[in-house]
Length: 393
Image (cartoon, rainbow, N blue to C red; front, side, top):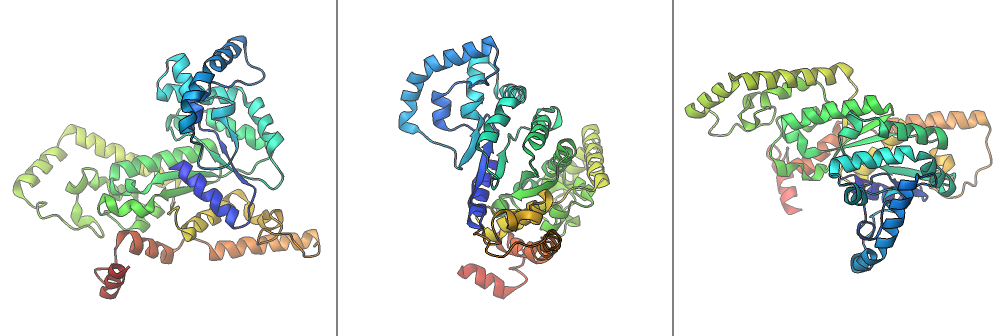
């Protein structure tokens, strides 16, 4: 998930020279165990009287709870610059004190953070350093990006007040590729988030190493990364019973041509519900294709090369590619011993660095073939030598 991504990305960036890589946890539901058991709703300096009373009550009850949680103190997997669960608001306290459910409680927490952004910005400003590289861990609840503007307002305020260059990294589980309906839903949600947040975006197919566990894909992985002609997924809405013969690498099951199954499939497709559902997905795919903004980068967070390709995409999106080496003290992250250069030389070097990274660190068919070979075993049947090699490994 996103916390695993932030942890893995933080470790990778520190290894490549960005030592001051820290995470800002803006997910009130991403609590450590000691926060859930010992902390209450933290309030900003400008809180109302009722908020102050809630904090007082929480502090009074926190000692016993903290004592109970001492034996199971578990922190977040990454190093944080700011954790809103400890210093602003957390979901468990809101649910307990206001009687809200998980979804309503998370909406309340994000609106609370938006209302106390002055306090949040001040906390970040007092801790951030000029060479700090920030990762923002945001909630994954869909409503926050489709029906609410609080996340958009929070990011816009952080960008303005702290002069940040943000890039949205949208994580989608790779197993959605095995389900046409889920992938089309993820595609429309990714496009919606890109439009609403108004930020440069890198969309990622995470957990690509687990994709083989969810069955065969109707098309090759390049189809799902490029996101062109998504209407070709519509015949597969009913799963294996779709037009299996139209797929690129789909083995038609033995029961597909069974007369009884064929009759049941035809009856289902004549139903009014199926026609409306099919038409809805056709329109959704048309919307995504018309905008033409979407593509995905596969990611295995445990593989350095895969993480590096995502970092290259992010660096080009947020502009770090122009100032990265200079900001980190040289290309290896150490102290820069070269004599100072003129502004014109800096501009030329920046342009060449951008061109080099765009040329050498992109996502191409060779890398895509490596992913399909490693995690999907697509070529081992046609290449006996490869099958033997995989079996030996």
